[in-house]
Image (cartoon, rainbow, N blue to C red; front, side):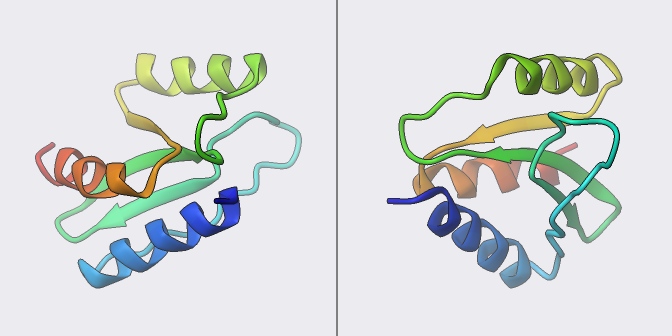
Amino acid sequence: MREKTVEQKLVAAVKKTGGICPKWVSPGFDGMPDRIVLLPGAKIGFVEVKAPGKKPRPLQVSRLTLLRKLGFKVYVLDEPDQIGGILDEIRST
């Protein structure tokens, strides 16, 4: 399964909950997560999407760590079956 397929499943699942999941492009600040998950009730999370079994690059790990230190929910998604749990965690904050 390709990263694009995992990403499409995430976007569809978020849409089903009434949220949006825009692609995040951050010019001049490489390594930021691929998607921002915005759910009803002002719930937010950041998701780095990978193909199954793939891991974030060192710069991506650094950016994910920075966002976590700022208090944001941050996830690495590499299997579609993780999506439900990620959305549940974001909703619970």
